[in-house]
Length: 430
Image 1 (cartoon, rainbow, N blue to C red):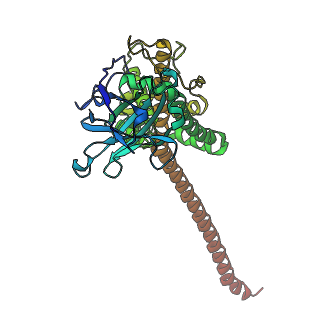
Image 2 (cartoon, one colour; image 1 turned 30 degrees about the vertical axis):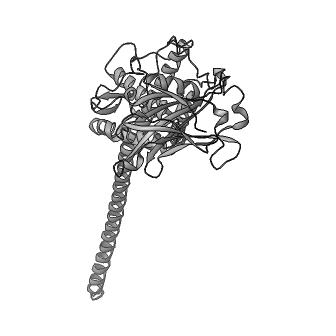
């Protein structure tokens, strides 16, 4: 029996507070995240009477592509589960080589909104993977527990965000409202990713400092460098570093990658604002001043702001803000009023992720400049010092050998003279 379905697609505009929601002022003019995002609702009537193996929603457009939801009421290659997928419509008619990222959430709505079943994922759609989702979205035995309403209607909601990748710098990925929802669920995960990176890089620097012989050697050579050399190796072009940042943190199929990118983007903007002396951007989570900056931005260049020795010690010892232990939050909102009952919590999350992003960018920049420029200069200076020492040793050995040779030659002359004089005196008639 064919099911009657009712559907609607909604695009939700977003607001733009500074840094967190603002788009890049240097954007290339392409579509912004909120223009590549949409919600879609599919209401399936007489759900319990459906006998078809699979059922498709009508197509809906997001980000220049047409999509549909595919549902298997009795499961796809699995038993006792409802299977759900997001699919690219008319994928066989798209131009060869087409490919794009999309982050999406599919929810089966419960009459108790807090019990609705949500699943999120990030996927690169292309010719051979034009559909993606969950074979075991939820157990069939649970569908009747508040998910099918009194009128035998099952409601499925989808949120789809097509992502414009920017391999040269951290980028805005998500519509503002969608981002807020995902932050509630994945804030702790994002913190863990950034914290693990900062602690790992800080640990490496800590080992350098703990190695007294190596640290002493490094300090001596660094202090012996002229100011121009120090200045030259303490800076790097933004594009050189930010490409590596994106490559390191944007991981395919990792659902938190988009939030990490947003955090790094916000942190980078805060860092740029801080470098320009903008007010209102240097406050921490508790309203206190943020730690003194490690990096400043001068047009298209990252510059270490202080003596490298102090910065390395600071990076090895200064932690990220305290961990957030509140765990995943309720992702439902009062959609009728458009107001969020947890507004203060949302603002706190924004500041937290911006500060974590700023700190992560700073440590990445310091680590990159240290590994690729400062340590290289140190190794070159160390090699030159060793070469000079070797030359001095060789010169000393040569001089010693020359002196020895001279002394040997002198002794030979004396012996030769004695041999010549002795016969002369032997003939004297006393």
